[in-house]
Length: 246
Image (cartoon, rainbow, N blue to C red; front, side, top):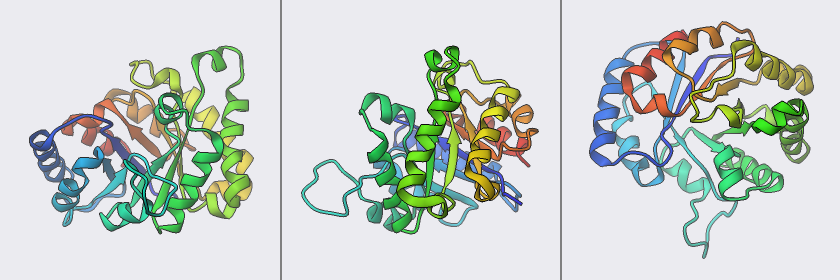
């Protein structure tokens, strides 16, 4: 059985006081034993704050990005070893905002995936197509290329150490989520091209996930959880999504 996973991506939002209240609320609302695994991803400056507050909870820590470099004179970069030292369990790689705003290409993302694995953390590989891709019926081609670049670099065994997150770019931050059927079609395709190994890999959906849409998404057999953006900034909304995954 693949354990459900919900990850809250706080992106470049929050400050010390806001994060403290959010983490306190989240820890209180998600207390006890649950079938679903939960992780949150604050911005880099607040990883230490979150690590301290989550230390004795059932909520893990996720980083939003990572460098391919191990150490040295790389100003502004943060290595996988540093993130592991902070207590991160998960690290996102290849998020569409990194691909688009920072021009991160397939090779770099594959290197980041490998760096996370070598640091004994779990990479979350983000995949997604644009509106133009979907309208031109190129969704499967785009997703396949993004996925297979990492498979070619790390092997199926390497990919199986991570998590895959399908985030259609046209649904991120737009309020326009993919229908459960649209999401299921892509998740099923991802699992199919990965072959037998695909049965053990968790595949999350991301893109304007809300409490009122979560249950329909999680009812689909190949959707193993969610990568949640805006709704993760409200502890009650985020926990409602987590509960829908139970």
